[in-house]
Length: 387
Ligand SMILES: Nc1ncnc2c1ncn2[C@@H]1O[C@H](COP(=O)(O)OP(=O)(O)O)[C@@H](O)[C@H]1O
Ligand SMILES: [Mg+2]
Image (cartoon, rainbow, N blue to C red; front, side):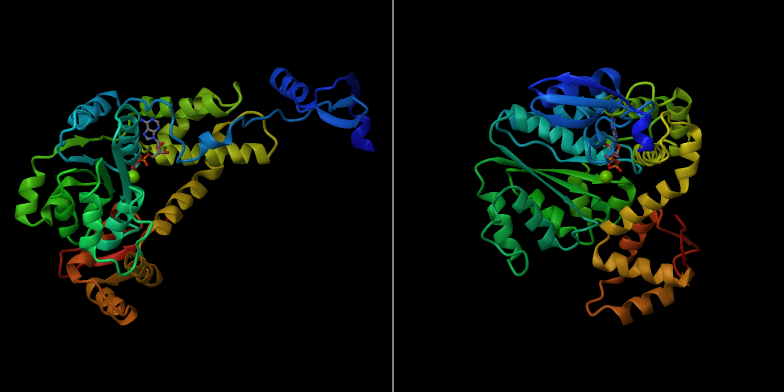
């Protein structure tokens, strides 16, 4: 009853319950509480001070939310759409390789441009696969064929790769396959087989082009060297601020986020949009939980560690079985020599991957900052990296 005493009840006669609530929310940003609703008579109680709705659209704080416009990537988007243009005229297009460090927008841009093309051009299909999660040739191709809507009658396990490839080949439409984290791929046959299908265009995404090419057979490499290349740099401080403001304007009440807070987030994230967005989301959550109406540097400072852990855990979640085994052995050991690591891995899995494949997996664990290594090939040691 004490809480009720602080309220100022007002009554409004209305037939329309929802719109009225909506108007109150919009105009006062205070949540009016419905006291009772009886024969068209509504009583709203306004508490003296109820935190306003800080978050107006929680979706925009999620990593997978794609803004209407991608910021500061106009040149790259134009380049990409120019490279894919021949598809609009019924022709094949060059493959594309997108490179850049983590959080530079590689995956987002690849999907964005292909979706745009899909809206403009009739008769194209596209698929997306991430080689961190799908590591075998058949599972990668199955995933793409599935996105093309041609795998409904096929089982993931046991369908011959040739059958899957035929499904793509026999399509009337042009197919664009986005193959993400392709530098982790252990056999180049996958890329070669897809590459050879006339109505397939590949968009390959990787962190480091040199690592990717270094492990390719020279024949495949020489073909791929003709691909169009787009390399994304880490975002500058101001660019990251703009990306953050884009989300803030779309999803957070105005006046909640201070300019210095955005500056601070951009400083901490150091060019990585994923890191920046994760920090923003965690900090906003912290502010809401604490009942605060402005987001300050203190909220960000408080969640810095949690945000790093969240990114670390999300990266671990995407690992395929064999990468996970390697990661866990290193994590359990803290630090381990390459020799011991291989021995433990072989003792642990029934179908160990070739050493060259394992080295790729370890490389990708390093890219994701899950582990670090030191020393030359023979004397190499791997260390778990704290988030
Ligand atoms: N130019 C941009 N404008 C708006 N949001 C972006 C931009 N670039 C990246 N992002 C966002 O940052 C996050 C990380 O981007 P992502 O494409 O996954 O990076 P990468 O694949 O290079 O690691 C995603 O949530 C994405 O929506
Ligand atoms: Mg990515």
